[in-house]
Length: 215
Image 1 (tube, rainbow, N blue to C red):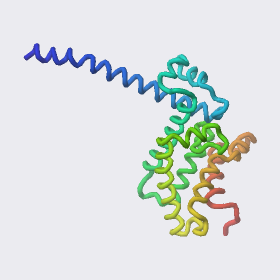
Image 2: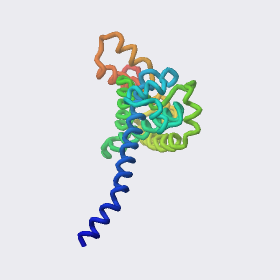
Image 3: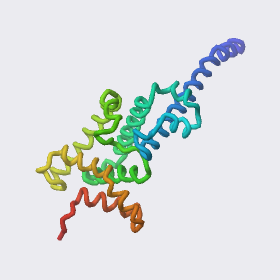
Image 4: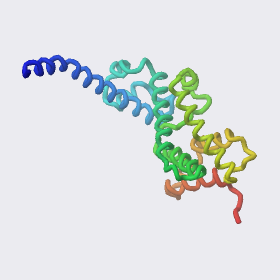
């Protein structure tokens, strides 16, 4: 019996080694994608290079190409990670939170990402990555899932009279995402007068509550 167990153990060693190797491969790939996401947030897609990412991870450029064929594929993977991460954040919000407060939480999350130089959820229309993202099914599927979730909350808030029901839900969603990429945050931060917390509060309030004086 002992010999049989030992034999099974020996037979499984290569499998265990392969599993460990796969885990290391996956961990390195995640580190590469995370580094690419942060560098795109800081420098933008056009300015960031594959060499920048490899240097940030501490690997050779050739090693990076074992995971991704090129810059477009790598950056598309980074965008998928950002959308998936945002989706997880939204699904972890308390179920008791009203729809409008969920939208506030989403906008606050996106604004804080911008202020920490994280990758934005949406790229500018003229970004060189726009084409590859259109062809990336994983990104498009994750974005559709996120779109359905946010639109549902907007429509619920409109039904509750918390958001102008005359506005198409897509318009409201675009306003939220556009504010997350608004240069207003950087302009206010550069003044050096306000804290990041104040800037985020005002950006959220002016987007979802408007600029009109309230009674």
